[in-house]
Length: 539
Image 1 (tube, rainbow, N blue to C red):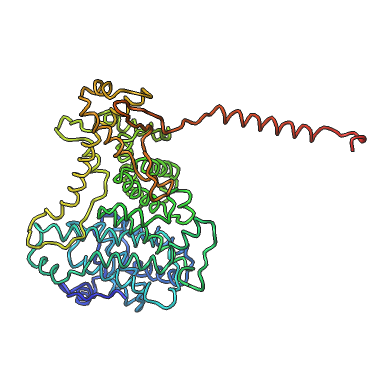
Image 2 (cartoon, helix red, strand yellow; image 1 turned 90 degrees about the horizontal axis):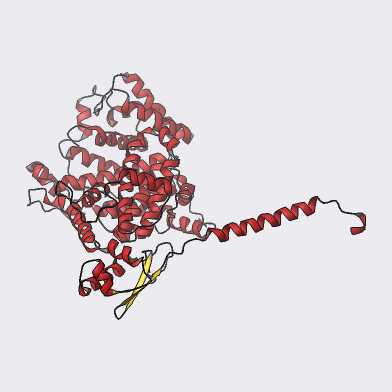
């Protein structure tokens, strides 16, 4: 069980609705031109509840994707409180908890002026209640929810944790009452509790074992475990792995983030065999690609970004059908395109032609520029592009409440910007070194120094930087000790001579075509012999 004691702050939602029994619609912050009656609202959620318990899951999906979306976007109608809804649907703890999860998600998405501390706390406690209902059972829950809804629950849980971390570190705007309440309730949205939820769902579902068995091509032996055989628990576990990837990325622990998803193949086609949630696949590869780029594994970062961007292009019909995800997917795609441009500048390589043309059109004024070029406004465009494309980092460390300013909120983000800027400074001359080395198979250090207008003593550290920065563990060939260069050339220095060799072997298309021609001729000859009439004497 994950029950945490907390002190009420300002009364709570239940007290508010008890004092106002006629106020059924507390929580609307969107616009709209249509209206809907109280009777229709109650009937809608009553039918929604019946679909959850009786199925089929396609009907639940219909209510969740269509009716729920319509309630948010098209109607100028407030949501009924859980206490008010309870009078009409009964004391159904599971449904009311699921309903409150959507209720608070709506508040986070659309309340003007931001979410109050009271609402953040109530939403957290509701998540704890929900996960206790899922985990603290001897038998699996006998309901089936759409994968999209399960993903939205996990994603929103991580998002609200991220939002609370920002809230509690922006102390310049907090009142004294807020500060005292935060001090009394340090377990609310605690990073250990969030990690505990994610790992508990992963362990309960045995999803890592299932994915590893699938990668090896062997069947998974459940051994009588009913939980891991249930789609609800399996997908909760899978999405929790992605939640851990996102959480570790937000806290700048890139190694642990990638370690968490070792059992997941980042190829979008193979991911789609396990998970059909479009936004989940895009979010997975965005965070994985970002982690690769921060660990200087540019080859894998570029491969993941290109694969995902092509997947998004092919999936436009899905995006049309799921309009409520369009904004998030389009923004993530734009961020990946920006990160791809940065990675290609640091590590040039050939990519898909359609993505390259799009990239060239979008970043025509930046791609040919030096890494540290300064724009007309005196800023580093590459640093600004990184600031736009990177996740919004958080610090899991306890808040220092005596510092009544926003420095603790800005520190994690600024620190990663500084790390990236230092990386640019260290790699500033690598593109020049690469361009000169590609022209020769052997080269004197003095000649390279003259090309770069530097002394030989200044060039030698640049060569060492080239070797160090573009060497990393290639995830495509998983070995713990094997380190390979991600550059398209390699070299070694013997005395004052640089010996250069291409590490990327250009594919010889002529050999491939000759083999196919020979196969075609053999096939034609075989077919011709089969059609030739045989004489009786040849039997």
